[in-house]
Image 1 (cartoon, rainbow, N blue to C red):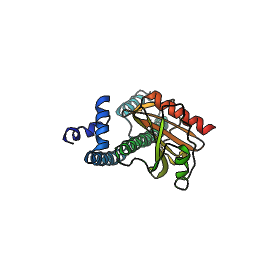
Image 2 (image 1 turned 180 degrees about the vertical axis):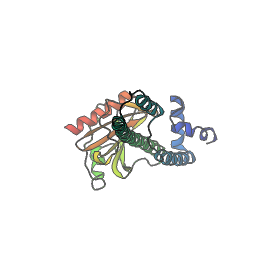
Image 3 (image 1 turned 30 degrees about the vertical axis):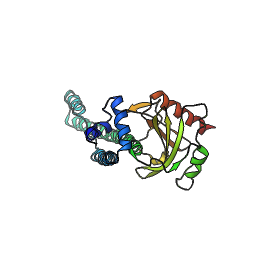
Image 4 (image 1 turned 120 degrees about the vertical axis):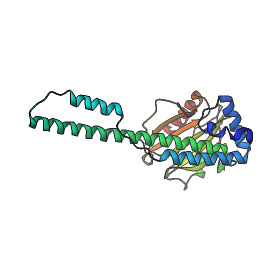
Length: 250
């Protein structure tokens, strides 16, 4: 444990090299003490990230508005009053819009952070799934009555993907399904929630992107919000996402 305990914080931040990430990941799966340490750090990081995320206008924005006010020509007192009122209204609207957009960005980043933490914690667990099966016809019925929606899983014959099983999960207060897939010794998490329960206004990402050393792709369809993430390469994440989209539209 001593050789690895000092690396756990850096491991959770995704700042190790690819080889070190694989080595620490393999160790965490086999060491109960390090797994417990990882889970504790994940919970602490989540609490810190959710605290105090407030937006305020940047110094550049304030300087720009002050310069704009100072550059206006002098007019009559009435005109000055109207101009000042207009500027105040503009500042108020700009502040409200900035606060709203900042809040939405913070909600999105917090959701992504929580999902990454869920993925890491699950991979570090000795029992990562509640229903163990490679058969989608076994995994899907297991969720009936446990979550408030249904979903369709793709056929994986002829692909390198394998379904390991699934478990219930929560994002904030929203219940959802968490499926685990593997491809060439890499683990991929597929999260599904009702889109209306997820804050942040995600929309659809243009494709898989990298966040904290994990590739992530998200989209919404038929009222459900999907997240696919893992330490596999972007192409594998996108291929699994494409198979899920095709299954959902069939």
